[in-house]
Length: 152
Image 1 (tube, rainbow, N blue to C red):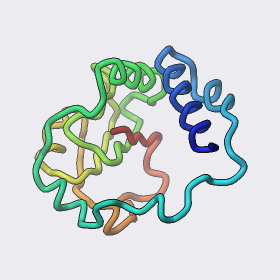
Image 2 (image 1 turned 45 degrees about the vertical axis):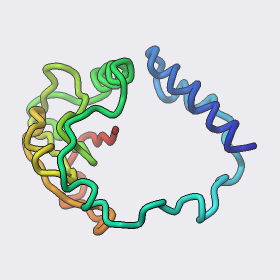
Image 3 (image 1 turned 135 degrees about the vertical axis):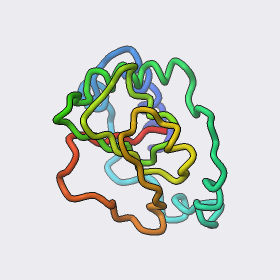
């Protein structure tokens, strides 16, 4: 039951974010369950093979619809620091970062799983291929980014 309530609250929250409300306004309204509702079995992957196998072939597709992309771009436009003195990390990056049209920062690093996808991402100033499931350490100095994004 707690899972259903949390799912419904999250769905409502995503809709509110898409209409321009800020995360603090939206997620502060959710009645979170007192304990994490999922046990270890619920978090197991259905396919335990290496993610590198799946990501070996580039996939130049979008995983969210145009409305979600627009909402994400609007949010990034409000929240992401911009300018030559700013550095942003797009973790789990691909061929598109969904940053607003014309966005730029002095450093926009992409960390992803497929080189062909990353090299097509025009907003990135640098990119690295790495499977964080195999090695969950980031290949960057601590405190070297002003913002980190991780979306689809």
